[in-house]
Amino acid sequence: MEDNKASTVVCSVLGMDHTNFCYRVCSVCERTLPENPSSLCKFCNCNNNNSVSSSKRLFRLLISIATDTKVKVVICFDRAARVFFGCSADHFFDFAKLHPFAAVTASKVLQGEMFKMTFTKPKNGNAQHLRVTTVVPLSSGFKPAIEILREKYGVRVGS
Ligand SMILES: [Zn+2]
Image (cartoon, rainbow, N blue to C red; front, top):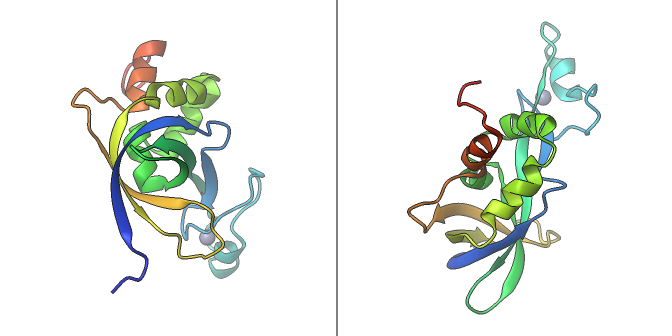
């Protein structure tokens, strides 16, 4: 039995923290790495001398939501956040490098969208935010942010 109870709510997104939506991890072991692009995973590079590990990005996103009774800030990790973005964090990060307002725009397109979300209480008692484990868009016309951004910026899929 899990002692951290999951709860499911229907809510709308009020906004997201678009200034800090992803973090770097080692692409082998997924340990968190510092933001400094030249820092490599100490763990993998010590244990595997043949190859230098690389890094990738995962989403970690704070969003504010409104249920029928309250407003709260919750945290989405990679799997849940991909529903909003429709792509990997690496892809979105690269897109945002070319289109500096992409993250702001993504935040705007999500505003007001309705979702069914499942939360779990953080296992770490010090963590402040409920963690979003599943996200289901309720609007049949929902498009993930990357699709809207590609249309907006005229970027063809695959280019
Ligand atoms: Zn590693």
